[in-house]
Length: 197
Image (cartoon, rainbow, N blue to C red; front, side, top):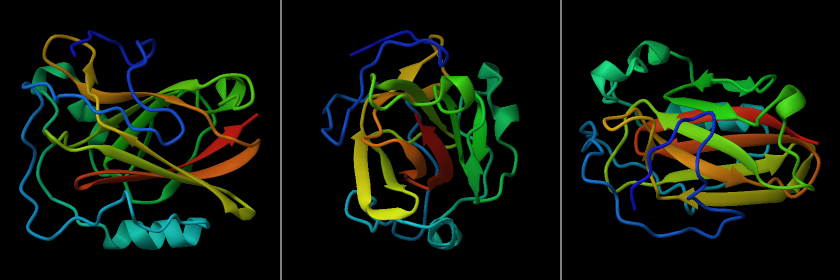
């Protein structure tokens, strides 16, 4: 499936509430960097229920130290630089950066996820897009560790013919409150706190 999208307004072609869509990866997605240690399987990994646990996972998650593999001409490489693997609060539409991930869309402030109304448009951009990989989003309602969710996204989109590459999603948080969201894709790791109104 091929779609030409912009992160701010895109056609939703990903997953909702943990039901992954399988799709062929586009041939233009970079192969990605070489990682010499095994990457944990986030589809079965524990869901962090506190910021401290999430940030401890971020310190252990395998990483690489090479320039971004996003297309050089796309202008997104300057957005990455070095960002700590800490949890970042969403207070606007973004983009927000944590670790190797940028996220934007209806994630904070007046544009916060309105879980009870409809799925929110959220885009996830890894520093190192990896062909044939997926983005796994694990989330827990802060203060209520039994309320968790996991979403797996496998479909890429891009804002022009040659990138930048990102995962579009329709995200619905099942309850109102502050959600701790950890997203991973290969060596990319990021943590965010979303508000669901």
